[in-house]
Amino acid sequence: MASVYDIPVVTIQGEETTLNQYQGKVLLIVNVASKCGLTPQYEGLQKLYQQKKEQGLEILGFPANDFLAQEPGSNEEIQQFCSLNYQVDFPLFAKISVVGEDKHPLYARLTQAIPERIGEGPWWKDLVDYGLTPNEPPEVLWNFEKFLINKEGEVVARFAPDIQADDPRIVDAINAELAR
Image 1 (cartoon, rainbow, N blue to C red):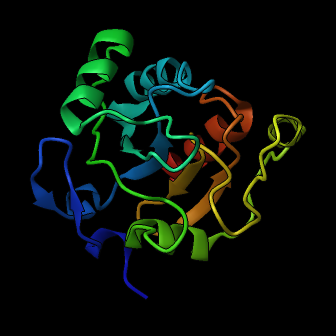
Image 2 (cartoon, helix red, strand yellow):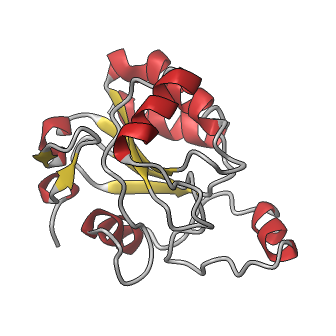
C-alpha cells in the first residue's frame, strides 16, 4: 500500500507534487467546500493551524465538489474565497473527488486505512431529514471530514464532518501526535 507521502497531488496553484514535503509533520487532511453549511469551519481550522504549525502541524485542504455541488468554483476562485473570507494560509490543493469511482488515490488510501469516523453523531440524521442518503463507511460522509496523519505518515484518526477543529477529541489527538 502506497504511503500518503508518495501519492501524487496538485497544489491549488496547479503544481504537481506529493505530500513528501510534509514527512515528519503531523497532518490534518480535510475535504473542504465553499458553499456548505460547514464552511465556517475554515475559521477554526485556520486558528488551529496558527496555534500548532510551529509545533509541526500542517492542515491540508482538498476542495471537493462531491456533495450537492457545494464547491463549484475554479481552483483560483476557491483560493481567493478562502483567503478573503477566512484568511486561510494553510496549504490548499486542487479540487478532487473524495468519493465514488473518481475518488482520488489519496482518499482511497485514507478511507481504507480507517473506515469508521469518530464522533458520528446526530448531524448525519439531518442529512436524511433533508432527503439525502449519507454515505456509509468507509466512504466520506460529507464536506469537512478530517483525517489525522502521524509523523510517520500513518493514518491514526478520522473525524466526522461536524466535529469542529477546536473539539477536544481533535485537539487531544493532535497534541498526542505532536508530542511523539
